[in-house]
Image (cartoon, rainbow, N blue to C red; front, top):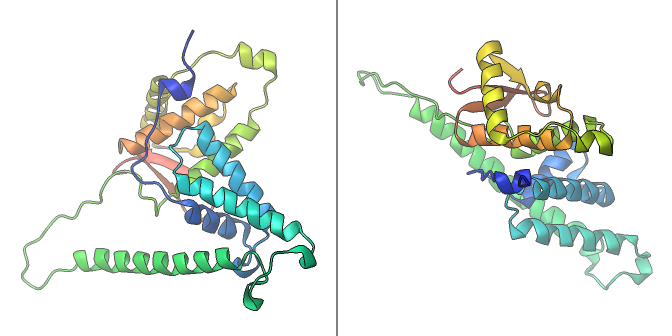
Length: 244
């Protein structure tokens, strides 16, 4: 009996973001006010992403589970009538306030770090007059500034929802392996130059095949064989060979 896909093949990404990154991603994706977070919607979406990460066995850090518990606590407190809520300081009568403070503080540091990184890259490409010519090579592989890990998981979720098979179809769907899908993705990119992420799932017939294909893509990214890029936030993801 073949092993489940997650047991057969485990992908470990070198770069992974934390729960505050996921919350900021969801807030930006839904275009909501960070000072007035719709906690029920955000909690539901957060749990959906958490379940997808568990399905893919992406080694969820404990921080993700702590944040899930925090969101559930805030949600339950907001469902209580105001007079039944625990005693709070006047400026903290909204149960979301501490979370909002954490998000704003984290975003400030993250934006500052991004600005410093941009300046470092700019400075690294500047040379004094008379300096020897130096070839600058872009580090291959997925840069999380190009495509966020959560963009990939969101696209994977969309692919899972598009696959409509009944139990009989699922049972008799042809088996697949991550190794086969790696070869298939590389062959398509060699022939076509690039592949739209959603195009990788057009002919799939089972949920196992969707998972297999996604794990293959993550492994190719980890091995720095392909890049995943977007022309803008939440746009179609394009998969290309490294160096293209």
